[in-house]
Image (cartoon, rainbow, N blue to C red; front, side, top):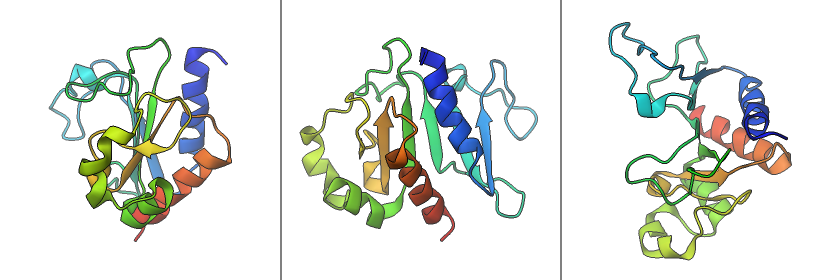
Length: 156
């Protein structure tokens, strides 16, 4: 796969999620209020919102980030073609996937290689809220399971 085709394959999985809206931010995009420009840092990133009754939620439950953000550089997304899938799976699924509850993450953050490819890891900034990440994920069963866990969590 080429650099963008790997990301495109994951976005295709996101687009198949029922009752969800997938929004990849285009350069110069305007926010939902119709007035506010979306910050340039978000251009090219993808956000997935739960839309069970047609109206998108305020916060995304899945994201694809394509670059380092200020204070979020541990995943090394400045590598060519690198991207990170982030999923809000909730505290219970986080504990199952990571091996400890989100509340313990601050004390255990140093145990993780946040730039490791294809591995479910705690989100570098939002682990305490039940978010996990995968840098350069594939589209196999583990990623599909992660998407399903995030969708189930947001539907609660």
